Image (cartoon, rainbow, N blue to C red; front, side):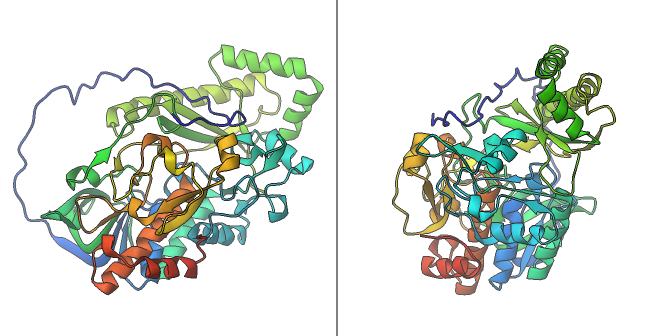
Length: 481
């Protein structure tokens, strides 16, 4: 298993014992009646899932001249970056201060920053060890996302951004609609429409009933690879227990915290602060939190819970974890109010309406990413993104860039399908470091651009001319070799 550097917080939970699966244990089946399903739309490109990758794919395909329909199960866009409250967009640059993830991801950050809804270190601090800047992120308990060690063992600041999830939802809506793509919310895609070995559309379920949508290219941006099991393509879902990808995330925000009083207590009475933290832990709480970094959110703290799971698409396990974690989170807030000065008038402002899944099924694509692809300086001929490798200690100092080929988005054995989410073609070791929000935006930008080219040229997605794809990616700000 690929290892984290010593400065990275990586104490992840082991999976708990799975609860009794009463429903799945029954072994009964029923026969569904054959029926005609109405076709409600046709489009050149159908994007399944409106998370970071899905929005990038839809906007990029529409900008490329394709007619596009973006389908999302919730009533908002942004996925984990908004609805999951995982509003941290990390690893946009490497330890040396080199900006690597641009394109659609940078466009989102720039648009939100213009509305006062994004925060990040200024460029002159990237890869540098300015003490005040380093202390800012250390005191906010954000070392995991912002601070690493350089080759001299000194703390430096990474280019990582945080965004306001509510403004983010609005801005992503605007970007999709401005691009000319069509949007369909509150709609769950249940299965692909197959014709031989090709995907020709999708079946949806919603309050409007069961419906069909036809398309020339389908892009799975569901995060969990929801379309994959019924396409016939090869998939892998192995995860190491206790790894980052074998976790559910559950986030909530507490507001009304008097942070000046809290930090004064922590600094002036360290022994009493330690005792209060120990008492909270003893009574079943977690005293650690991150200070909100958004300028317009004084007195807000973020608490990110991680819970081990190897079955992140199992609805019974999801239900069990959601109920238990919500109970624990309210209890934790009550203990902070009781024991920690500064929390007396606080309240839970917001909790994520969706569990954060970190890993799951992945395609076996035309190229399969493994650990060896992290330990090289050689780009692929079809590179569509460069990722900052910041989390592997000495290996990151030696290999600060990781290259991603277009072929890792193309599944083997099925036509008309691209995958632009964490279900891209890679093993568990590669996934551990490179399936985060900015990575998915890069996958989405590449897949959407390629889909538009495929439709325009009348070719299969696996036969897209890379030189044309490269031009399109560079046109919209992608950073390539």
